[in-house]
Length: 293
Image 1 (spheres, rainbow, N blue to C red):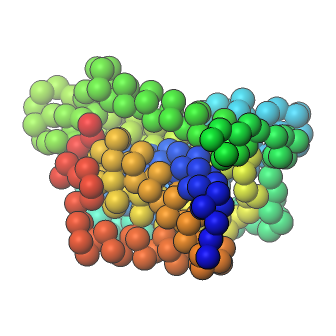
Image 2 (image 1 turned 120 degrees about the vertical axis):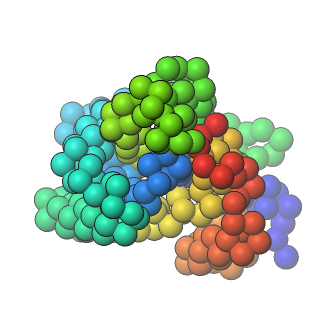
């Protein structure tokens, strides 16, 4: 029997972790919903963001919260370069060729990480892992609380960007009907560049935040890709609010499941949720059938 206090603490930890999952999944959801591309390299881009934070922390002592902005800039540039050099040539060739390109790109990132940074796991231990505060008997650690707050702010800023800026409105118009958007004078090639840049920048932010909680190694990309997929499927493609709800749900499900079954079953729980949602409600809880909110 699990004590009530332990279960409450597990739920709180899951909610705090779920915020980062939502940020990671939001980038994947944007690219899929707008460009109709399944970015199989998304998890590995998150890995690159984590390594950027680790390298800045270990070399110049830059806190991961500041390193996160550097990681976002680096990943935005990487996403733009990927679109310009590779994806732009195959983006209109159906889904198969972009998937193969991105799968190959993920393997390249993984092997580059292994070659230049070794296979050893690395993290950004800023010395506050055990500190925090207590609310209603539940302990809120500073690293998890700070990363959760930053994650929610990033999601809110992304929603405001898509909702109230001209570029964001052009992105949503392209998602709804690419041909009509072109007739309306929207440069859809530029929109694709921005979309992939923003999506990969969000992956970089998630990677930098996760480096404060978990070690980073060249192989974590596949695991986080699976989690991001599960969140997107659960929340619905193109739904910012759905992505946040999906991330929180996955974080709580993983932690509660690990409490009862053991930590080694985390990925099995994630995959089970992924399959269950696909069977019961394939459009997700907040699915819009394309386009972003």
